[in-house]
Image (cartoon, rainbow, N blue to C red; front, top):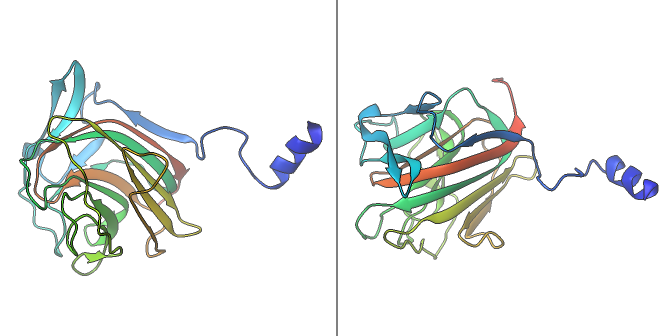
Length: 216
């Protein structure tokens, strides 16, 4: 037993089940002071099924410097490199090809970040992992699988980002098999955020584990 423990320590393998330390848990029961939206008028807290949720009401009155999502709410004062993020989400948009919710990560500014577009129909502008790097968003994936949204249903999302390998894995409902994956090392730190390109939805029970970093 002692030998096994020493071996694990020598390989820097964590002895706990979770890959990274807890950074925060958010159930929106204490308000929105930790969140910074691109348009405050398009976000509010409401009660859904006895739970406080963060509601996005539609396209934000925000014009990004390059073609990319309009509705973004960033977690304030938290920068991470590698991380695992989980959340409950629900679209409240009527069905259409590009109805979506989005998650933003390694966000370094309005023109430097990654995001995953959880679009209903896959094409070069929908249902992909994107990078915005001082230019209009560019798809890093060529996914041919859309997101199977169900009206009035909560879905589970998990995002795992490992900056050393460059790996990005996106899970939707199935937490064992990624729905979308890519390897890219353009950005290795930044904020995380939630939102949509121009649609509506609910966000709740967000948990972030990761490696916190200071602004370079």
